Amino acid sequence: MTIPVSPSTADLQQRLLAEQRSPDTERLRSRGLAANPAGRLTLRWVDRSEQTWSDEDEVPQVSRQTELLPDTSKTLISRNNSPDIPFDRSINPYKGCEHGCVYCFARPSHSYLDLSPGLDFETQIFYKTNVVALLRKAFDKPGYQCRPLALGANTDAYQPAEKSLRITRTILEQMLAYRHPVTLVTKGALILRDLDLLQALAAQNLVQVMVSVTTLDLSLKARLEPRAAGPARRLQVIRALREAGVPVGAMIAPVIPVLTDHELERLVERAAGAGAQSINYVLLRLPHEVKDLFQDWLGTHFPLQAEHVMSRLRDMRGGRDNDPEFGSRMRGSGPFAEFLAQRFRRALAKQGLLDASLPELRTDLFRRPGEGEQMTLF
Image 1 (cartoon, rainbow, N blue to C red):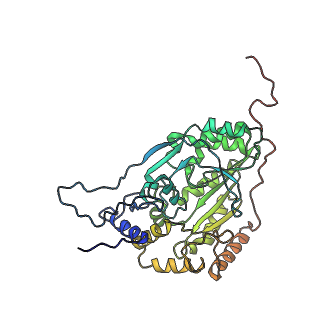
Image 2 (spheres, helix red, strand yellow):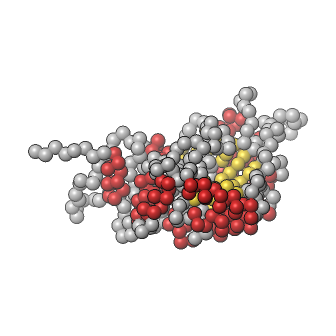
């Protein structure tokens, strides 16, 4: 009797990536990924790669439908002390993101829910409940210190579910009621629905918006970010926010070697032309499971360029697929990374934005509703 040798976790990941693709083009239509491997924190791994299925068996199918699930967390505000992030607190109205961006650094967070960072991340969307009560509980604490709060720092606050759930809008209403400063990063055009609230916040210097732009190539965008707004629409969002008096910048993220880095100057030019007051960029990050998922995607969509992409990325990541170190994780290191930074600085200088930044947000206006106001009986 032959005793099978237990495969390594890496082997299991690769085998499940291959096993759980859908038929045909091995892609699920309008999804970023078809693979649905178990997350790194899964305690029990069911390896189906050795199973065989007869015609009578019901073959497991990967779900194509989006499920919206309540997240009944007891707290709403997350804290961090990362030295390369310009905020120390954030709110993510959603866990998971239907935009389906294949490179999303937040994908591994679904492992904490015992779900896959692959297709589950795009289809199993958790939404925060009780947001008004939780915000008021946090803001009303006697010792609360007001500092800018980042909205949607991990997953997009304006993904499709927001259209019906309106959680982000509810949070913005509370920000306005408390006169609390807030920042947003999004690639969703739905943000323009809340222009009334953003204008009211901007009038008191309480809001900044960064619109994420990745590529001007619509065909690449469709494969890279299948359910996010298109490039032209994002530029329109920048223009509309600027014209409405809302401080707005552009975040070129991620810059992907070989696939999008050649667009850097053009992206800066177009974003500046649309009215971006500040522009920044982030190099592609591939933490935890994302590195395998991204390489699987590369092999499907860009097989001839896949090795070149990863080789160049490793040159900018100290020989690794990913660099988690503070100070280098956002921009990379080495000659290729420095050349990219030089190109970016020249592009900014050409647009007159080399030292530009969005206006600093006010924290001195914070007040709890009713404080300092004459209470009336009627």
